[in-house]
Image (tube, rainbow, N blue to C red):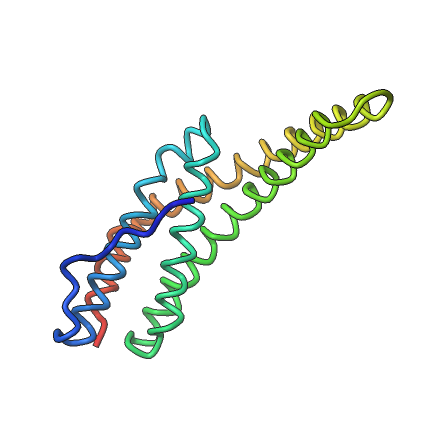
Length: 157
């Protein structure tokens, strides 16, 4: 699992808005650091790390909702939720496929063919969902979500 980075330059004596910017900048950068690997799709751990990091961003946003202008908050929060949903669908397939592969490794006889067919089917479905996820990430990038998010966090009180 993606371990959250310690925010060593965080000073609780600073105003909330400054601390919040540091926290969100760090968590958002953790999330986007896994984006390239997630889009390439060569290692499912990038997807897992990006999903975990995006949920951390969401948690901070939820806790400090009142620190942001309502309209700006709603837009940024919805984009994070959209990303989390698209990552989550693919990650759910990864978990299911892994469990089926472990089940297959422990089974013998006639069950193997049925399990193999199920695994193949779920891999095809996963790839279709992964394409949608990549399209979502590319669309968010086209809309400048990284730059917009960095501007948004400066609006914290």
